[in-house]
Image (cartoon, rainbow, N blue to C red; front, side):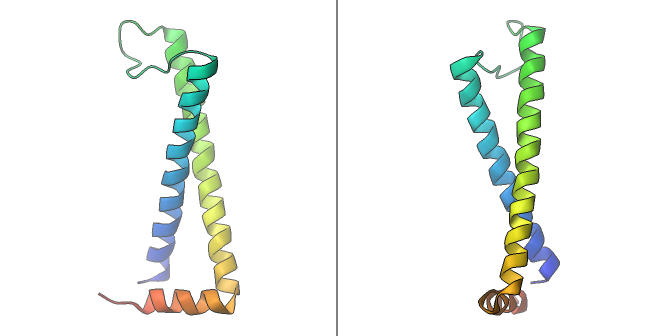
Length: 98
């Protein structure tokens, strides 16, 4: 496996997981504090104000979580490449062919 492919898998996986976690946590926060998050912002019973607040808050939270996920994955890969044990592990993974 090429190093670029490995980084893409690790970085994307971390970003997706952190984005999902952020979305779930902001849903719970909204349920307990502000209002029930709209399932479909286009529905008749959802006010413009609620739809806009939910869209802005969830978009910002998920975007920030994805960036944090990428940064954590990047730092982990750098730390792994610096240690002898990590280099051996990466060499095994990168040399692996199907």
